[in-house]
Amino acid sequence: MAQGGNAIRGSRVGAGPMGEAERGEAAPRQSVAYYCSHDHRSVVTFSVEAAIPDSWDCPKCGLPASVDSENPPPAPKIEPYKTHLAYVKERRSDAEAADILDEALELLRSRRKSGDLIF
Image (cartoon, rainbow, N blue to C red; front, top):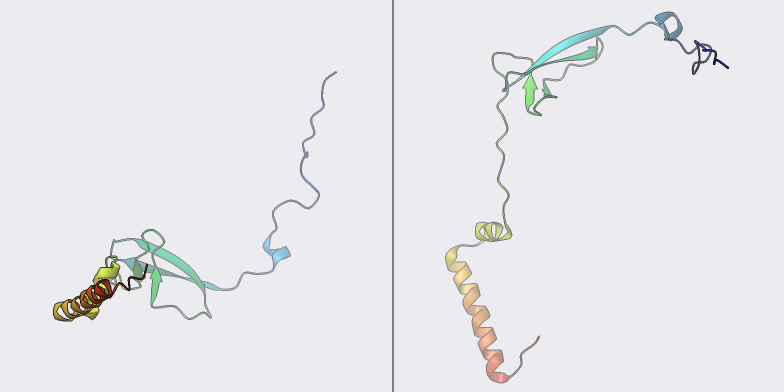
């Protein structure tokens, strides 16, 4: 017994692509080119009524891009990860750190002498 083919299997009536007549007319648009410091060109489409931003993130590399192809914005400087010790060193000088250490050691020594160790 041969199986008969059905040309419209898996589709439904009205499943075809919609045209502009059914969707309505598209809003007027404008395309704006943005350039990043890696020489990437990104074209973004906006409504004619929309305010065009001065900068846009490049979709290829993530750097900021501008509409000026001759002078794209520079890549932002990335600060390295700081450890807790680096933050402490920013707040205290070496002399202050030495004073605090001396106070803590003196307190520890006085507790050892009196037997008041707290664990």
